[in-house]
Length: 309
Image 1 (cartoon, rainbow, N blue to C red):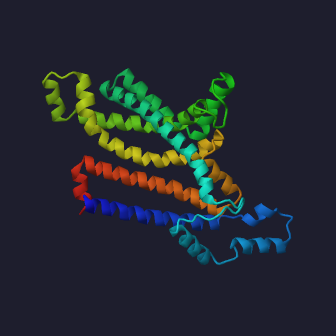
Image 2: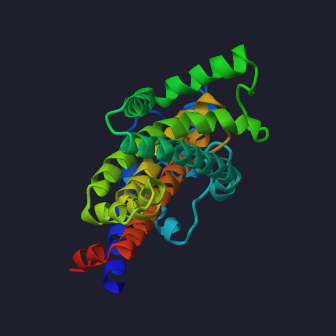
Image 3: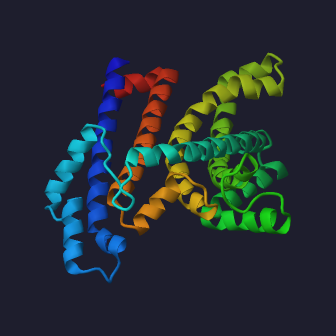
């Protein structure tokens, strides 16, 4: 188990370092100058050069990258080029909103996916199965930037049940959580159906039925335990999709989270803030996937033996 844990941690560190390098290089290759954004096009060349020197943007790219890595090792994310505020403080202000949206969307996805997936598997090839899979197909086919405005149009403007945007209590969380959760629920429900159908054909399931156990006990107590292993893996993988979709959803609903901060920083060419946001999202994704691997290995000893070789 220790060897399996060590191999997963080493892999996670390599991925984090690769993401750090990639994000730094891509942001500096993208056209645009933060000095021009801050001072405007009418600024004097001398003022631009002075500000560029003050921000350290006149140094070679490798020097800037080395300084960035050095600060990162010391857990110093630096200051925003635009507002000069500590980036750590800016992230701490936005993390609760994104965490609230992500957790709520995950809850919505699970509450929708498991009943649909189980119903489709138990009622295979019936109208229930076709309806459940049809709903999942619709959910996965509609992107967040389209689902969000549709929900706003119907439930906010026409019916007036929910606020259009902003973060003001539980009611304002419902539409963003539905926007993110439905797409994830569509994929999860299909996975639940597929794995449960495979498990229901196993010999021990037929034995449980031969003993006279009810369908409810066979499905939920015996079949679901083994069917959950691939679903747990998919949940970890889908978290990255969830965080990526949160960027779009937060912009659509003006949700004050990391996604909206990332978009605002990209528009301002605020490199340090964008790097910190992307790095935090990537780190969360890697950590969750590493924990998913560990949970999978704990549930299935065969994974530990294969991963430790």
